[in-house]
Image (cartoon, rainbow, N blue to C red; front, top):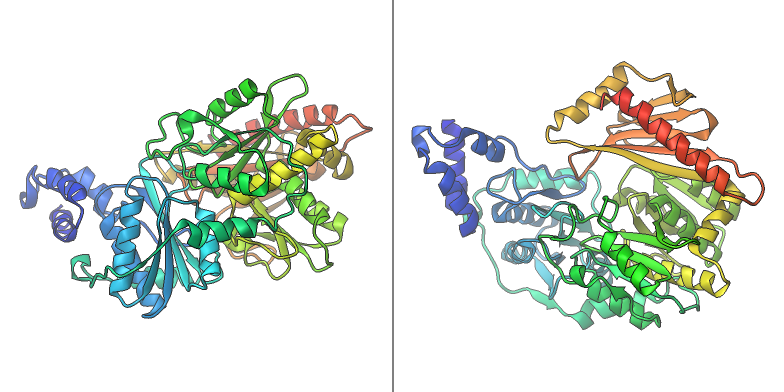
Length: 550
């Protein structure tokens, strides 16, 4: 306990933030060095630390090394500065979360104080704008202060390298080691001389780059849109206007950035209830398409009208399949490459084969998709992340919810012109390749050890059959499979083309299970195959939950 008090006092004394200093004072004043401070609260803040990895940093706001705060951010910036070295250029962006602008300014102060050149976004713009800016400005690295679709109490710190993609090993380990070597932040030299990037400096070039995407020439489409209290609203509206579309009708209660996300339980389009207001708006305005971004606008959710009324949200895999085929039909050249993660649908491999192009499968995370090689024209992962390209390449080397929204709108407008919808295009694919249906089983936990126990339960008692399907192969992803780096997780291939992957989330306290079944389509009517696939997925969920002990 004495050590925790000492650590807390040392942290407080170097902390430039009066809020987190007051937080520690409140804990320490219950007894201070006499040992009567709150032991559980101090252990939670100082008994561990946020680890810097390939996703950078992400965690709850608060005092101490196990929280996101100004000291944690300044240490991260100092570590990044040491790895890059003086004279290098770093672009810094930030979203609308609590303290994002403060963390961005602190990063700029530390970097310029260490002799680097920093360029800071003038406003709260989407993550893909930052990723684009790194390459557009020829910078050596980028920092985006965001926690994406995490709960309101979180914030994060994503680092991009000079290729405009998120960092991968060993760079993350080098930065982590440099962070650990940083001393007190109140001893760091701080600068104030950084460049501010205005709208014309970076948003206009970004929108100009999006104009090369395969949007097509159809523009007659009515879109209901929500940025989910995030930073995508203004940029999406401008992107649609510049591209010649009618500006989407936006959910008024979710239109402006609000770090408390008051209308949703979780600011993630995939979470139950998150799309309710957008779907209500779509019904009220008779929209042809529903689009949502997550709070930093690097993800894109899509909904389409049902023939009998109402709307259906498409899965990330369904949108990924539609976008992949759309891109391949609107690009040329035999050396094209499409890529996705191992937890996404196997449909992309069949689409690639059908179009005579290369296909790659990676670990989860866009940082890996962007490393698959030259010729990449499209990448996606099932968690609503898409990077859409053209013959000119990929404008953004990361997920881009704005570019994806534009391309989906163009695709839907072309279908509408032909008297069809995105759901009709999905049926076309099912007839062509078989119906690939995917679903997720996930469990959010307070105690992270429960996730490790569930995975270990599967390792020690592997299933031989799930929902009447024989388990044909079991792979431990921690051993490295198919040339992929080791990662925590298990993959099962089942009879009839079904597949299950179980892994811990890399950004949330969740155990995530990814299920896929493939059902052949007989004749023109896809409905029976969809009904069978839905039942098969439900049966798999039930049996897998039992096997996991959930």
